Image 1: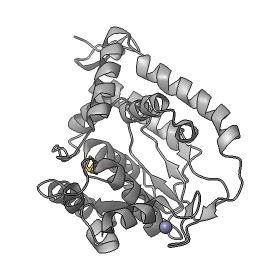
Image 2: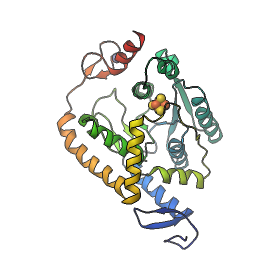
Image 3: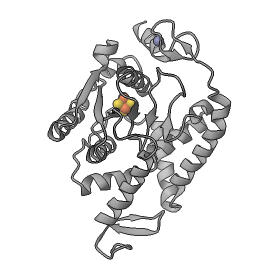
Image 4: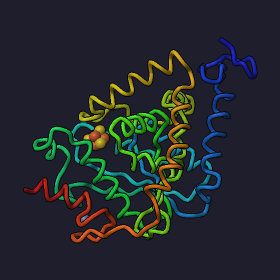
Length: 296
Ligand code: SF4
Ligand code: ZN
């Protein structure tokens, strides 16, 4: 199989484009897409935090931002998941040390007094707790130091989340979809940029392998709720039969988000949690609610 652009040996077939590509033609297209997402959303000089787990997506993101000389600091979260997080964190530490990228690690145990392993003994599905606590921790540690948080969610993640929100009727969450996620004019909330959100997972793995970008390949033992796995399975089936389906869903979701934004995100000042002072809806924020629930 030869590259449809230059005739060299092809390494990947992008069915939605109807093209087979060699290493360099594929890399050029891949990088062009990421650069386009960064242009207009992140300034090279501003200090930004990159949320890095050590997996393929965040390691590719870190690699590109560092190569393109953005002003980055890697932010890692240790949720306390034995036989998993220590491996992924060690991949990040080694890479950052070798490439002289500053990094910071924050732990659930130190910040919230509980690990996800401990939480799993009390709660069947720790992922929803884990996600809320992680977002809160990163936002808290990053605000007033970095102007933006870069997250490496890929196309597959984004489309799965969109469909799950739709099926569950979570329209307010759907309103927050987009390249730049944030609440306008609220200084407590650091905007999140997702420059890989229109790049399929398979292409990120291919890019990492071509460019020898190390990444931790192990999965969190609690990873993927059965529901997300089923949604991913259906989406992959559709994508194989009808290439371009995931891009089409992303684009429809973004259009819908624009309409939903004017309904839900009106710019009205949100409440502040009476326990911790975080911005929230109502009296107590989600984190304090969770911590209260856990400790009871
Ligand atoms: Fe946390 Fe779930 Fe992700 Fe594991 S899979 S790190 S428990 S959100
Ligand atoms: Zn609170």
